[in-house]
Length: 116
Length: 111
Image (cartoon, rainbow over all chains, first blue to last red):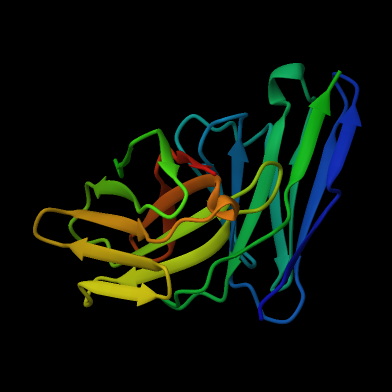
């Protein structure tokens, strides 16, 4: 089946530094990737939608200059949390779909970010 | 904007009994409704899904029903087992591809 690899699985960083999270689709071309954030005991909140080769579309309230998304190829999307602060600590999950109205959504394993 | 409401937020069921979780959505154009099971610190796992042209779908102990007129869909788990304990999320697809998730239901199966 479709597999999405997400790295790192966990990361601890100091306030003010930047962290990059990668998501790769291993056996299919991910036309569209979604980035979610999940706080403890809460639901998945969509942050942004990225399509290969174009700028990401951010949800209302998500700072695009803080959460930089790059979807440079059909198999790789990255989320960079810039100038991280403790309130950015969360579980970040990507999801990929081949697009074209298809129904398959494959999730990465998630990244636990802790900012100290 | 898009909205998916999910109830109840917590549910405790005796082992062997059935569990039902309900969701409502706001956009009548939604066409795809998946259900996910998530264990602590893990990725959501698709357990069943239904498309808007179908009213009901069943896979062994799990079933989903969809009422397009009322804009709600439900997850039914029969003969519950301890391993069914987890957080369950409904979702609805708005527009072409974006999924919006419900608030989640923490299901506890009591042995």
